[in-house]
Image (cartoon, rainbow, N blue to C red; front, side):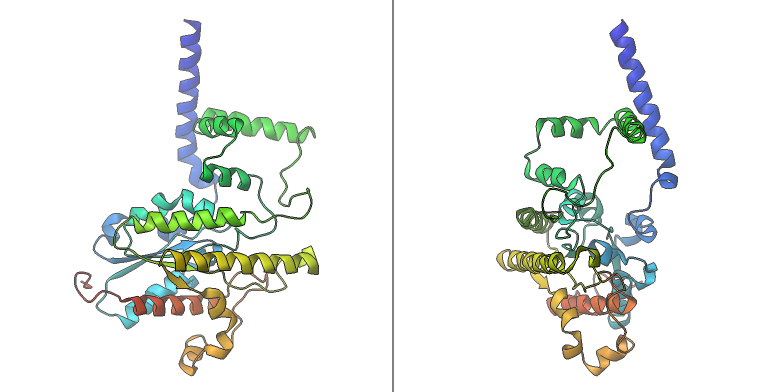
Length: 331
């Protein structure tokens, strides 16, 4: 009887915490997806041509209003140039996310919308020197190679009671100095990228395979946008050079994946890098002159950069063939 009583007590506590967390989640946790994205319902988009922009903070539009993120600009351009096409462009970018994290939320944030076209744009966080403590765990989980304690922890994470007790105990231990605070950069040798080259390759291949299984979806793999010396300026010249080398290698992985899987490649790195040589007068006028493409942090895009990405995506969609007026005629 005592065991039954304890089990009932634990289950009741867990369910109560689950309800409490669900009610207070919006107030306690930062919004990860754009509010405009969270407001979308299936009824709003069911009869539209659906384009899903899937990526990290470049897709999200870090430090920019929603209207200046490239998915929002792309939606405006599509409506202007294809008046009869009833289109919905959905921004499912989340800042700080890697390809591995993207793969974990693919069903919820991409496939749920039954997209006609998907732009996958990850990599900057994958190759970023300065991994997060959970990144190796996520990568092993993707590969199905979790340690026993990690498998146990993964199962227990479904319990809100366990998560609450775990969090409070860890905060208490840190307060008394018995547990070190999590670090962002490895102290064992040189800083490591958040996702290994093999992990990036597997994640990209899995993303392509699962999206292609979704049916007649036009898929674009995008390379990373360039970074400047301002990014990771605190690491010093040697590590900055290593960071650029990792990004070059990871971009090759993305290009090779697109070629091998016969997927459309959107080479944003080359487009932004060579914009001064390749842009036409009309394109320059669309971008409001020579406004810088990269923000002061050396990695995120300015409104001009987001606009150039939107124009590049638009051109790629047009080259692959947008549908005619039917069955997505604007009503």
